[in-house]
Amino acid sequence: MYGFLRVSKEFKSGKVATSVLWTVGCVFLITAYAAYAFLRYTGRPHPYLPPWKDSATLGLAPLFFVAPVGMALSVFAGIGGASRRVVVPLLLAMLSLFLVGVLEGMSV
Image (cartoon, rainbow, N blue to C red; front, side, top):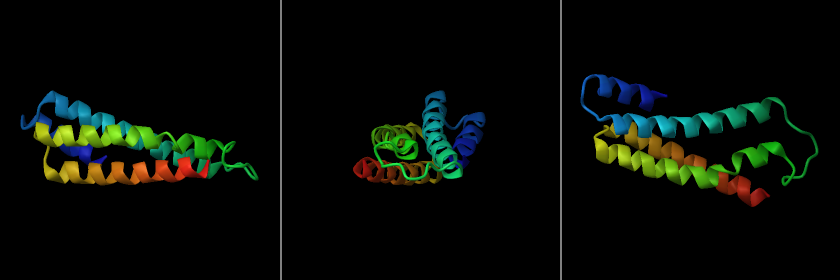
């Protein structure tokens, strides 16, 4: 959320292009999906399901495929003029979500 708000502020002042705003917005949507999936399945756990049937595992496993796209978009935003204060946290968030996706995929 911080990255998106910071880039929108930089966009209003004319420091970054529209494409940077869109790329950071897409990365924000990826992180919002991860937060939604985690909170949804943490609040309503399914007892005694094996990992290949558990909807929480199946909801977080696609992060293995989506997080590298977020990493590429973060690098593109950095090349496009976004500040390091925006790009570095986004890259770290995407890396952690990628690792979550790897672990969830291995559990299946």
